Image (tube, rainbow, N blue to C red; front, side, top):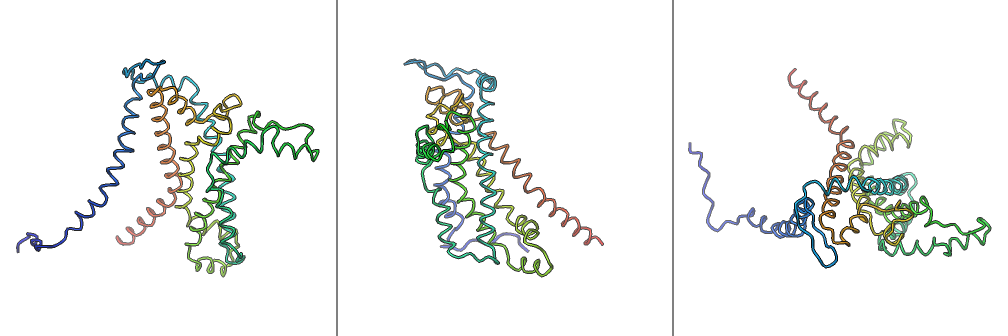
Length: 321
């Protein structure tokens, strides 16, 4: 018998060819606007390349000198600021969002007008971060309405200088990030919970499981992929935090640069036309995001992969027997 494949009929359509044609624009745009700039950023991070007045210095190859200068300066401090601001805002965000998602999707509560509540909690996500920051700057300034109300109600004898206090400024940044994103997180978690088969809850209820047990044993394990997605995207957004602290502190990261984030530090180098140092900061941020995201993904999916391996191992043993 011949193993030759039958000749394609004349006039037949090559669907694979059209598939490649349709996805080609995406890959072209990705290469032009993301891949090439990423490669050039990494390339210039090894060069001395900046402006001094009207004079351009470089590009001169300096090896790892930019990276050594970064880590010997204030980069670790700004990295700590960024992670702290993200964690302080993310913890209440995920907790409140999980509680709201569980309440809105509860079969026993059956809350009415859920559409209205979903719209209300999602609305802050539609407001620009710059507008949000300017609003909070006006509300919590020394002569703002918050301080005026506190003094009028005799809660405080004098205005509280929120923006002159380290934890006051950090708390405001974390509060703004929480208000802007908890609605989006709630919608995602609600969609994940609503995708769970209700028969699992009914069977667990018949077996005498409490609501708390069903949440920990059924809900959390089954929405784990969405939790991984929320955590990774929130981490990436937190490491790229810029507009809120930039506007709230007028670009100074005050007090004493305790609210300066990595992107604010990067913006300073771009503003001063120091492309070599800016490339080094961008490369460090990219590697940090990649490592943390892989670590989070590995940790949160370890149990699931371990269970699959155990099941396949048991199946293999059963097949041998």
